[in-house]
Length: 406
Image 1 (cartoon, rainbow, N blue to C red):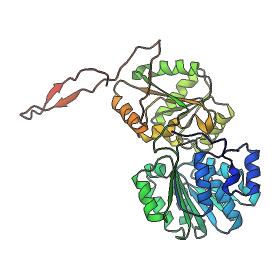
Image 2 (tube, rainbow, N blue to C red):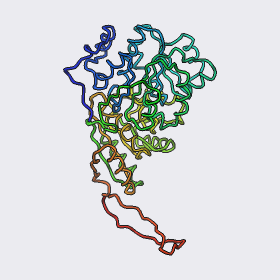
Image 3 (cartoon, helix red, strand yellow):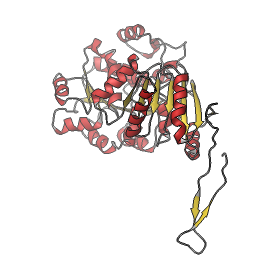
Image 4 (cartoon, rainbow, N blue to C red):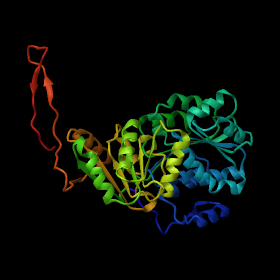
């Protein structure tokens, strides 16, 4: 399980420059998280690294602090590849806390943003490039960005980029980055495809892991409601009245997110939606509105599972279970961040017993089942299956298996 920062350990002994330590003090960052404590000295030495830590553990500062310090002393650029626009903006915000003090410019290269604005910043020779793979290749194709001075390459949330089908783009980008460089992989999980990238494109990387791959934060209270599809709306209304703090709600589809958002507004709550059908401007407005408290509830698809860094989210609600079991960890990791407590509530229909078993196997713990006094008690049931007769009848033979709890 994730450990909180050790109050006996400070940033002082990690080789960080006094100027950066002053900024950390001003930001009230006095004790490094486990991933920061392990990663910063390694990155500072220029060694390749594969860092595994669950969401909300401070991975961004674990590489931003040493990268800024190294770039302030040497020439060259840093390229950070991320899977989503939201994560790119979040990573840039972390760099912006420190980089300007050393005269280091950053640029965010993402789709949905005006190309001209990006070109304007690129002409100023930014030392730190934070990009999504697709838009970066657009610039490379138009010869508006060159990667020949990149000395530090970071693949942040590499597993998510592969899940989203970015492997061809990543391989293409790597061909234009100098082979003499420092390479880092940071992620919550490290599946086989990510390991293979590390084996081919990294030089004897140091592997650090502060929580087992797939571990859910221990400060998060997890609950499961078994509820029929038609009763989800009623249960949601009860829970939104019960939990009055910021709520991040996940829908499986973009269309579903819009429908749920409208439903929540009809209940009288301030809410917004964020998914890939929304423009970058709409997504930024929704996220900023959520951070400021304009919207108490943010409805999102999995595109936001790793791109939302908001401290103080009281409750995450999985209105729909994720298609990918690993995304369960990333979703609930949006609450209980930076040492805060959090709550994660999942809705599952009686037919989704196998999906819950997969999640429990992944997180290596059972999800406690809760019941609401105003809703019927439901149980998981096995599915009806069809088996053919021994003679191979085309119609087959219907066989009903008993309803039971697993």
